[in-house]
Image 1 (cartoon, helix red, strand yellow):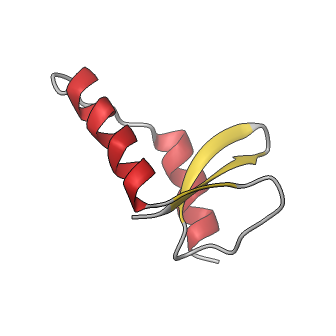
Image 2 (cartoon, rainbow, N blue to C red):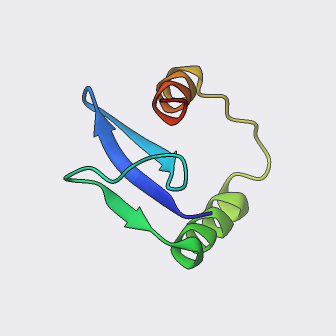
Amino acid sequence: MAIRLRIVDGVRVALCAAKTKSEVGDIYLNDGWHYAISRKYWRDYDEIEIVDEKHTKIINEIEQR
C-alpha cells in the first residue's frame, strides 16, 4: 500500500495514500518503498507487539475525512 508521511501538530504519521489527498510537505512512498520498510520493521521487531494509540487516533481521524 502506498503511504504518505506527514507531520500533524508536531507528530509524524504515516497515512494511507488512497484515503488522503496530497498536502505540501508530504513524503510519498510507493508500494515498493513501503514494502521494503515494512520488511525491515518485521525483521527487527518480530518478537514484540507495539500498540501506539496516540498515532492510531490521529491517523484514523485524518483518513476518515
